[in-house]
Image (cartoon, rainbow, N blue to C red; front, side):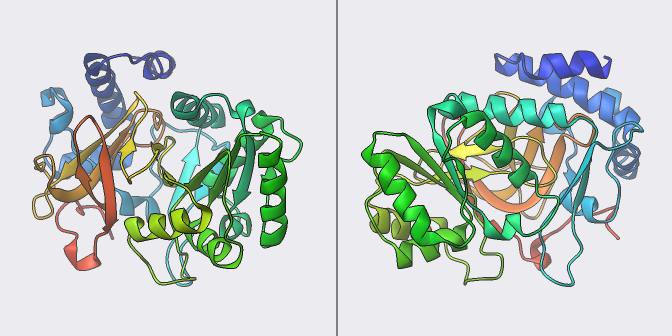
Length: 329
């Protein structure tokens, strides 16, 4: 199938059978036209035409984005997204052939879970992302802010008092608010300016960025809920190497849009899958990632729950990563 036809079919998925069919089409396209993925399949001695279901598809280790150009086809990138990463660490790079495909994916995903961006005043507390180039999260939030069309939508770098004042004024006027923030900045906000957040969705994107000690998501949500008197804390789960996001509307349970799916692999056997309720490595199918690789084995630990929902439980230690690394230098 031609890539133009695949682009259209990705966002037309309405059932599990649609997803399975589209995923296999994307797999065969990438197995043919993505040199890194093709090489990986060759190492595994996988013949693409022998794969008949998504659980038979090999997932590319996400680490390869740090050492190789993971491209399906040859193209000049319209933009290159890069990961954050502490000093001395290599960054993942994701050359994007069509920024319009990323925009369509994150806007459709947002509308799927939250409705129209213009229903909200969108505020962002993402200092570490703003202070570097190449953040796919900042690109997404920029567009959501633009589409909200609210005059007070925008970023707050370190002026937490101004953020509190703005939110209280908006809420008093009945305005719906979406505040999206990186974990450490939200904790700073909670400690310095606790107040009841009315008419507000508070969404954390994860990430201490070396600023604070890592804590469990449950503890984070308890701290934020207590400080801001919120029953539920929302979460966004995405990464540089993907073009789609999963969202949680509370209790740390994430859901994916129709063109994205999560599978949980065994820790010691990366080509087998856990039963529901068991912890393992998170594999992600992101069909919007058409011109890169749609089948990514992440370094995150998770657990699959009922009704197509999953939890993100933390990260693998380097010593825990086994198999799946045939091309990692």
